[in-house]
Image (cartoon, rainbow, N blue to C red; front, side, top):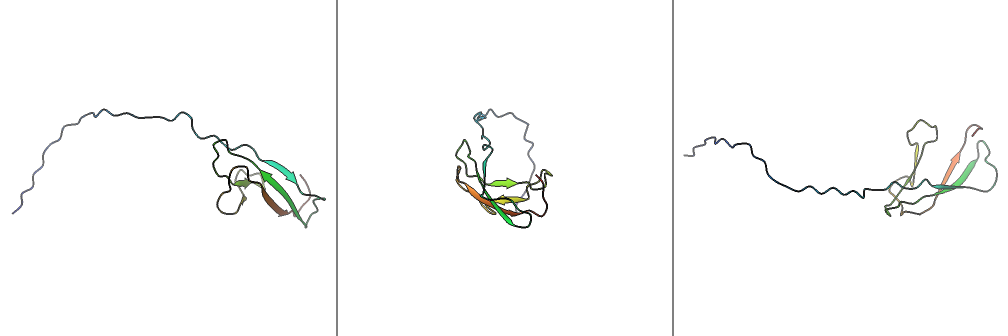
Length: 99
């Protein structure tokens, strides 16, 4: 037969080293936006390109907040990421005129 018992273990401090990386991860640059040729006409597709880069060389994607509510409405590319510095084409049909 087995016998179990409880043995008290006193609290103890164990010495250890913590290394903090102070270099961090830099944010990507704001992308350059190049408008497509021609006029932007309500109800017609309009294209432009975006190109940004990450100072750490990390892959990126572009998040667009079309209605200025602080929440991205479109990611480009739609899934995944592209290498830093890669330009992407964005197309949109605008329903109303304005800026």
